[in-house]
Image 1 (cartoon, one colour):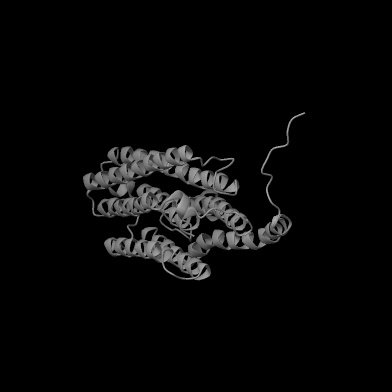
Image 2 (cartoon, helix red, strand yellow):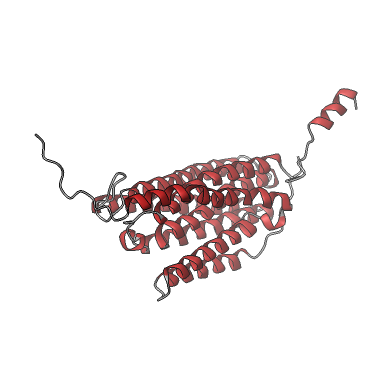
Length: 205
Length: 109
């Protein structure tokens, strides 16, 4: 090995000590930590606005929780299909992995469609971004901002999942796409994790 | 770069735990308890569900501890932010409490 190559090895290690199998995974974790700060800020701001408002409406009475409980269950199911896709890929069954990736994308698509239905229904009942008939006008602002930001993440996740299907299909060796699917899974489970918090803070509390 | 497959836990068991905890959350909302108790219970249940997703679905349980610290940092920042924002919010509440909103718009001249 030349001196230059040795020097490069010293300054640019091929493996990260945090995620030895992949730099990409570390990159995704750092991205998710940054994204979590964004969601954390929104939820913390929501909590303070609500706690210090004199006329905040009762969320589960106004928004209803039957549909969102179903959406929560759907997202949990899609997280299971995501880990199953990774598990099948680990076992070398590419076809089953693709099938489960498509189930996950379908779960995400249904979730976003239900959210669009919920928004339409609430807007017709008078919930707007700048006001509502039940109390504090920031109730609508925070609702649309938080659920909209999350919905954008789910939509992005569906696109990511579909691109992963193509990625796996283009690689005959299942081991060649394992790492990329695991990184995609991290994003998808993060979206599920955030919804668990959003469902509790915006709808149940 | 080497690709290593993770140990896969029993995902269906995690799924059932998440489903059961969601049902418990929905039941807690309608329980005859004080608002504070309901709030504490719901926050605890949500954090429990989030921990299950992070530990098993995101495989954080099988990663190095440093990665867990990275993942927990946003939670600490968000908690800190609540305490940073509260004094401002409480000051607004103190000024607006008891002030009745205008019921009629002033007539145009």
